[in-house]
Length: 486
Image (cartoon, rainbow, N blue to C red; front, side, top):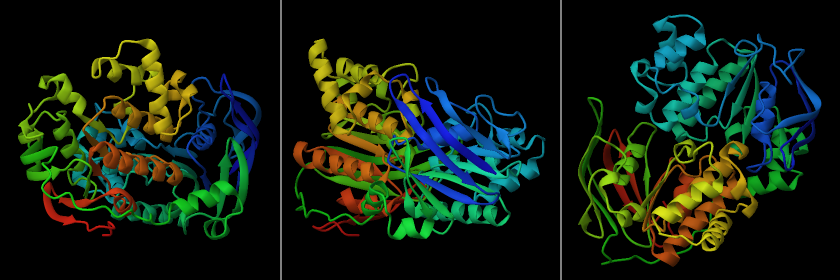
């Protein structure tokens, strides 16, 4: 079904894939794992016959069902033979079309019942077919994109981080559906940094490092006793963190207070009477199922959601509801790291341009030498080489784009950091380092953090307090004791 032979792909400055070879029989499931930037997504896209701008084929071949996909894919391959689910579902779904219209296009027919059946197949209610993509949570968008990928019953399904944006319940629903897909004889090429997501669903695990395969072995062997350093590092990073005890901050005025916050999407109420506080030096985690209103909450606090009521107070001062009406200092003080870097990074601007704008607009920097030094420091904070400042988002992996989005938020010098699933696109090693960075900023700079996540490991590693959002209401708030266990 899939044969990749000595594939060599280069960017203008360096090799991306260095002679990769692998094969998969019909119905076989492979996982390709590795750190962010190892070449996983580039490999996945090559199977579809797609190369990112600036990537060139310098050797080798890729064949799917006996047909070459590079340099030009066969027109009959896409959809029926091989289908693709990308990492960023927000860019997969057309923002100007309701879900039923997108699914009709994927099906090749106008049949509302079949479109609704596809949604139910991935654990979504059929009523969502009437919604626009912007009315869905990140996890719901991901499952809707999976429904579109399955529309024409492909023989090979290429999945790029299909569960990274999902809460545990939704993740298990998607895993269950993919298990049924496997039983029907569909092959899987699963790109991931989360080894636990593929446990029990794939036959083999292929480990990439710096564009090379460093391990190719049965899944149970790699998941228990990996032979390569990258796989061992990913496995070790999934272990629970050893939380550092931190004392209570009693009597300290909150840096952020939310009172009676409500929000609507169209005629639908998505947040109802939300009240919470974030203290300087502490991290509040907001958890809840996909669609519970977590992202809308972050956007309301940042002043980006148009239909919001209630009050957001910074250092006890009420802020205007809309960000463009807030003073520059207050806009700088509250920074949002969205789940999708596409919401933050302009595709035609370099990383330097993206970081330079908040430094100039929000911090008033003008000296080019000072700006370059600060950009280098920010990239170092998120573990990216300084040379990445010259790259555009299209020349970065998903995890690298997410790290740039975090650096951009930090460039403003915030007092409060709103983190919306900011580590879901990162490999477990990078995820751990970024979470430790946020925890360190809280402790060393008295930064307040509101962390939206569905991952209990993330909560355990960095949060002081936990609150649960369900159907737009806060259902429970837990104050975590010293030692931060849940």
